[in-house]
Length: 218
Image (cartoon, rainbow, N blue to C red; front, side, top):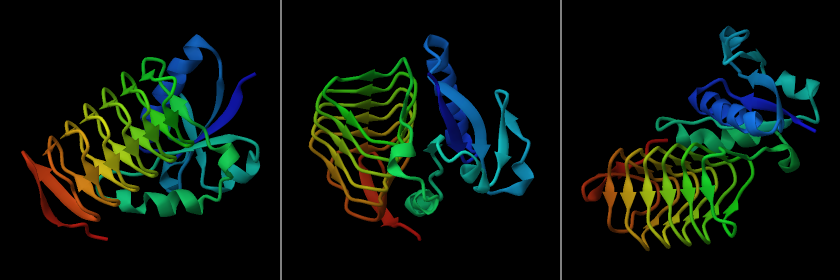
């Protein structure tokens, strides 16, 4: 029996997650997609792939048993993701986890709730992916690495083994991270960076090799 699902908000991450859900449903009808929720009233009635924006957060009350995938965030506002998601007041049991059928996930990897894993992602043995994460297409997370909660990882990222990425980080597309590297919480790694040494907490780092540019702006 399929489960009812609401997507939040009507942004790029949720619309791309919708494609993952549609791909899952072509194999087995697991999700009954009710629609999007968004706080912007001008978006009501907009649609993606035939799935409409139903309204604001009051929609959650209309469907109290529905699963929710809440995937806000981009490089400009990733630090606010935790606050936005927590403010929805969704019970843990109602958060969905979406994994595209083409993704390769090791049987001993662990993936948290309210996390989306997009096409052709590889999650290797012993990997731990936290709750409320977004992993964009073609990214590889190698053995025994840990991705903290509320993180976003861009497309075509290569994370080598035994890497530790703290909570609420943003890893830009095309980044390569050497094995046994740690990246502190709330840090951002710029597009196409090569990270070969540890990155501290709450900084922006970029380049080849990646160097700290500044502290993050709140």
